[in-house]
Length: 194
Image (cartoon, rainbow, N blue to C red):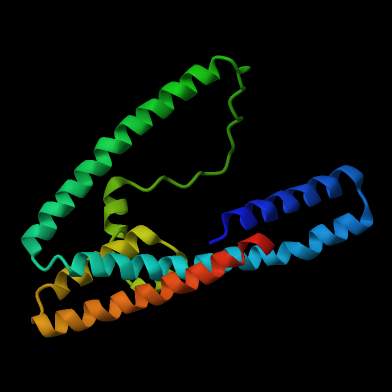
């Protein structure tokens, strides 16, 4: 991927947007509006590839482990690593924001409304909703966490299959991941003009 071309395209797009906004020139405004659909197509193309690519890579990763006991140990380590890195990040973020808010003017609380606000999702509902009713719908909605639960369970079930079937499924997912990676690289090559 050509990083220099991406940076040049980013600078040109930023320059065009600033010039169009600052001058109000009809020609520059028209040019800025004319290239805007290219950016939307670029983002949609990336979104098109991300979910199946993540699903294929996770399936191959879990399916190649081969032993459910190893999978359980690795899953426990992954969850432990997640919490060991997330909790300090939360505490640091809260500390920095608490410090930064001391330099801002106080904000009046919002006035109460008469409408009933919907209740937040409880922990039990959150855990229940992690198991998708329909994995295809979850993928279409972009609910990556629920989709990953399904993919991990499917890949774990694959490890219990005979080795020939296991190899067939993981080889298919690996080939799919390779094709999606190639497609993503093609999309990223268009970044300088989008």
